[in-house]
Length: 204
Ligand SMILES: [Ca+2]
Picture: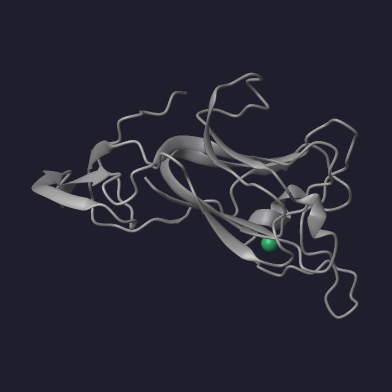
């Protein structure tokens, strides 16, 4: 399935400028230019519906490159616990892949429909080894790259350096909004990938 690249009704809450009022499927809308306030963005015009982005990832199908005891669903279960152990219960709260030299571990979520994706919010592990999550990519696909190897993607964000332990950080997509349905996070080579929660902020 291909996602339409020209959504007629999208909305976001980032800076920009409002233009002519209009309507879209019965909703009051305005044309909205992206890029006026942030000149590094590509300038595009969309017809806006007055809704805010919300997290579309929670409880959607998630998978990862490999599993070291802790499943991919831990990163979109709606829980923001970011410790491997809570009160010494040994109940791991986050995902965990294997690691292999030269291989890039990944985690992904299928939103099960096309959305206009504005940002991805990542909650990092707090109790150990933050250095494993660094220089990673956040990419948006029209279709599941597990099923369609080599599927094209649009890069939402390239994170430079190490994500600090335990933080929850919003990564606003470059050239937003990006229309797609699968969001994949791919770590630097040779690392175990652990994510405690991933929110995909998007609108239909
Ligand atoms: Ca979680």
